[in-house]
Length: 257
Image (cartoon, rainbow, N blue to C red; front, side):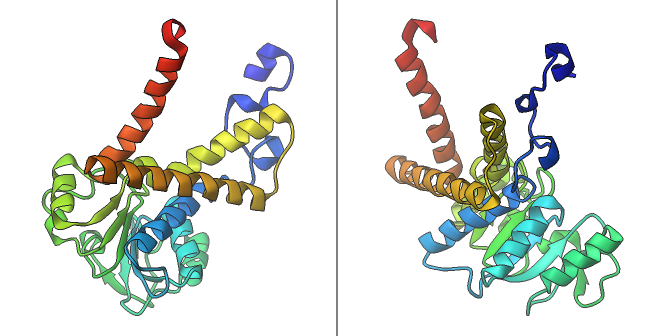
């Protein structure tokens, strides 16, 4: 519609487009890939790695399924997954490739028999090193937060943790990767898409993924530095980083801000 009004093609006006219409390679996988990257950094900070790390994924849609697949390929053990139809658990690890094929054919996890069926609530509290809430908001609450056993929570969804639960997680010493950082892969590659559209030159997928990793690793480091400097939780540190960037721009622009 915008292009019709302009009387020429303006692909940069919207992102998330099909590649054939000026979209970017790697955009569909970007949010899940971003979760994998920052989780890897968090594991390293705590002296761990993906090798043998047990991971529970709440939400097996675009974000959760891709994150689970990428982490499994790095050596992680996906012990629990869920979607709106059911929740599955196997302490020895689920076959993510098989689950992806199952969901592609049936549009849901329900009916898969090579794992124990558990409640949706139990996915959040299973024994694991990493919990990835990748579905909806406010799933981690004052009620279930005390029972979470994960050492790291990577917020693949927007706002999955209530304010009351956030304080409980902090008191428990759980390392939370806040949504503003954890799921930033998607909007970052949307920015890449805009850049490519504006320049009329498109990158291969390896270039997209490499540049995404550079930005997220740098951002993770900035948040960690801010958390250490001000002795605050990661969520507050991420807000400080963001606001500080905007404030710096306003100071430089002065009266023209």
